[in-house]
Image (cartoon, rainbow, N blue to C red):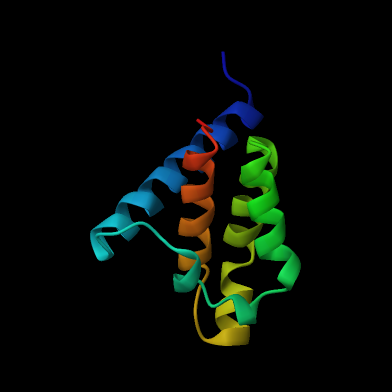
Amino acid sequence: VTTTGENHMKTRIISAAALALLLAGCNSSSATSSAVPWSDYAASVKTGIDAAAAAKDCVSLQTSFDNADANNQATMTRTGHNNAALMSYILDARTAAGCK
């Protein structure tokens, strides 16, 4: 028996994997820091992701990914682009940190 929370987490993981595959299909290389329009985000976004990756803090990295996903439309409205590059950067950070 799975709980609603477990189902939600599975859905988020599947969504993250689908996004990663989509981004991989659009761009043969991994996301790099230079691919993210950092000037459109608070400086704490990048430093937080990088610090969490260095600390291998998978929970914080997942939270960063979830926040980017939840704010995707707001970013599109504010900047004219979505959070795909940022989300790819976070997925790469999760991989580098050894997160599952």
